[in-house]
Image (tube, rainbow, N blue to C red; front, side, top):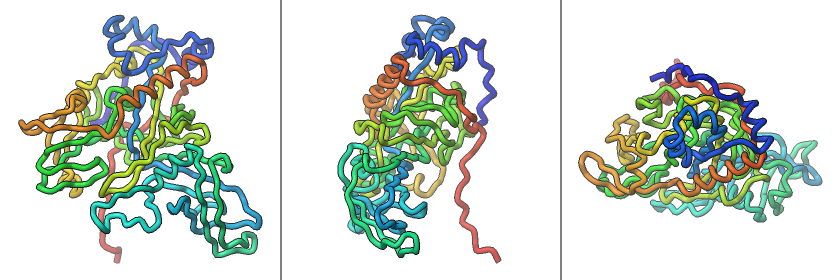
Length: 407
């Protein structure tokens, strides 16, 4: 369904008014974890008049992440056409000494799943973690040589401080909702959702639920392109709708999506990041990834926006999907919908039978991020920003159609 046009109950504040309060140190800021009980005690309208910002956050693996790095020029100069950082290939189809490193890139000569299931001990996500942590890494690069870039090979060692720029550029982060993965087959399955035991013996999910940014702003009223964000401790922004963004989806009565829906493209300066919120991840039998911490403030412009930040885990439903057949074959079948309250309890029920469940994301870490962001706002170090453009609410995700060669 297409989200309805939002008719907000009388505006309480503007972005400018909220930022003036932040600058003066008088802004009232709460985390999404705190706001629910506060509104229950104070009442919605009274709380909306009082509270200026609600902070949201998430921490978990986000495969569609990466970074652009600039090394500066050596003497003599080189135009890198192949490059490896700690033996992990980086993309060199940019300018002479710019590279892009993806979080899921495997290390050179990694056996992958040749001996299934592979271990994937080190890859792009781990390089990014090491870079943010200030470790020394090796760069090895080759070139075919040109008149202005004569060097054909270079090997050197560097830290993030040696780089001119280290910019995190994540095409798809902060999925609005996501699948609960289960295995309906008789054999163990190794997936990006972790190890799934046969015959529905376990299930895994990956979301901060009631803390998650887009679940607190389900209709994209304040989170949009240009919104200032907290990305692993650095102040960044949303540079685009995320890849696979699909706001046109099935939603519950409170407008919260019952499937993946919205995503965000995020960027920030890696030199300002905190290594505690960037972690390389290895998934046996699948590959490598990067766990990322993201915090997004929601300015309370009116009571309707505040009401949406009061969504509770019990009111957020996630689809349970079989990753042995239905997910890889893209059948569209959903076994059940379960609430995040059920998921966080450690056990769900699927077709009348109990299933133990685990989380790939960390609610504890997400709450830490939401608290850190709230503290930065209270100190006047982080201001809210009005989106330059709204996220699309009526877009669906199109499949890749396999077509014959045109005649």
